[in-house]
Image 1 (cartoon, protein in one colour):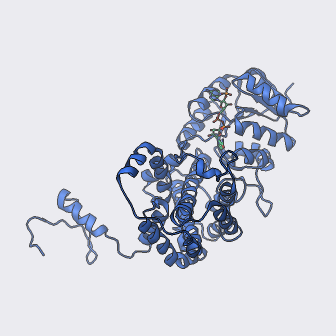
Image 2 (spheres, rainbow, N blue to C red; image 1 turned 90 degrees about the horizontal axis):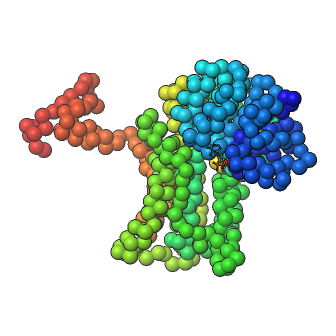
Length: 474
Ligand SMILES: NC(=O)c1ccc[n+]([C@@H]2O[C@H](COP(=O)([O-])OP(=O)(O)OC[C@H]3O[C@@H](n4cnc5c(N)ncnc54)[C@H](OP(=O)(O)O)[C@@H]3O)[C@@H](O)[C@H]2O)c1
């Protein structure tokens, strides 16, 4: 009998918790996992006394679903998505809906939407953020694909999504093709940037100025009660206060300083380069992870190169407020860059994205949730095509107020020899944006010199070339 509302394939961390979330919200969910033992374990741990039904073959899984069938894939991104969808294909019929909830590349999603549409099957690419806890309690959900197909799964998504302070579910139809996965990709890019910014401020106050982790945890906790209130600042306070039971030192101090990455940050930078959108803070976040991974080389270089002495303990207190302002302004730059990229992508790929909606659904459930997102939402709701968030009065004021402190923090970090790629990329982004005159005139002159690429002039219309080797030197 066909009784189940939705099926989920892929009982990894995310899949398991999404199933439990849907079941808690009254949906009858069928589950399947490639490795049967995982399904058995899941049913033993979480399936007893629920309406969840386990299947050990895709044919039976599909047969149990009400029409149109809705199947949520939560498998590893890449080839596994195509492999599972291809196995499911012959079992589906026109009007059925395949939903990819993993971190797929938006280009793959666009291709899959088209490929499945030819068979009359709807393919939705849905970004889901919030990690394990979010999947269980309420994630932020970023759907893209066919709008009518989305409407058929919308009630389920609205039920399981996180609810923002105003009670609105953190899900909204974002656009056709890969619009949902694109938005999730940029979300992850902003996440890379903010995490790197936090790490640099930790480095400044802890390694640079000697503030112990326990005090720094209190600093982040207090920042989280103010304008910087956000999930990442909140969990930084938790992380810094955790003691390693084996050594008695802060756990963070014994964690290897080599950051890993799964690819969404890199994709964000790659696409921003293709679209010509500057996102230097996000790039810095990605590159800082790559550099951290070169640990053997760093250890060798540390032995070879000396550097300035770090400041005496006790100095940190003087720099706390400046650090808060520098972090806040840099975080604004990271969000501004992400939103600018979304705007350009929406234009190039015809996503028709509403940026206010993207900001709205990031306000709860996802990793980059932050109080500031309500201001981002409000900014785009009143002016949908602002060139950049930094022009909006609220953010203009934050950047303006931070300027002196931002420079002072970076001056001190440079003096101490502490790397600050994301903080400095943010300030350089701001400084470049507010420069009426950039040195691009020299770039144009050099290009014209060696390649006859021509240049334009400030004082006259037209395109010019100079025979540089023939002219009079200054
Ligand atoms: N973890 C997070 O915090 C998080 C957050 C947001 C989004 N995501 C995304 O959500 C998706 C799921 O993530 P996850 O962390 O729960 O799990 P995952 O480790 O990315 O994937 C594990 C699941 O994929 C299945 N799988 C892998 N290759 C397969 C194949 N060729 N055929 C069939 N099934 C295959 C596994 O089945 P077996 O048990 O048989 O190996 C398992 O059920 C990923 O795209 C991930 O990037 C993850």
